[in-house]
Image (cartoon, rainbow, N blue to C red; front, side, top):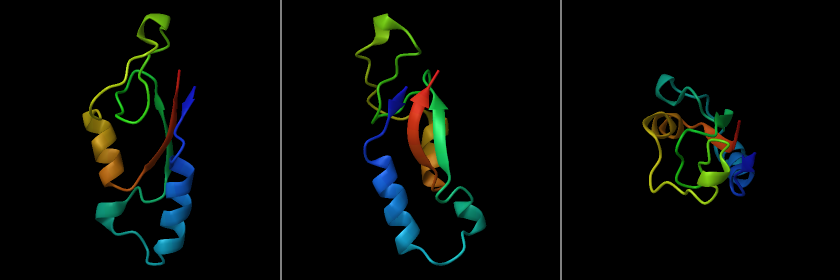
Length: 80
């Protein structure tokens, strides 16, 4: 499992800076998410559980990750 070092700090910061309820557009605000390890994220290695992909670091997020982050979700890490 890979954990994001800055995810918990970002979650804590967003919890203290926003006191208004989430709008429909921000439906996932402050929801912690753990992604499957075969989904590309720019800030975490994507190994798909394979030793051969041990050093794989995608340059950009997958489509679903971009959508989740825009909606306010916090990617805590990745697991198998």
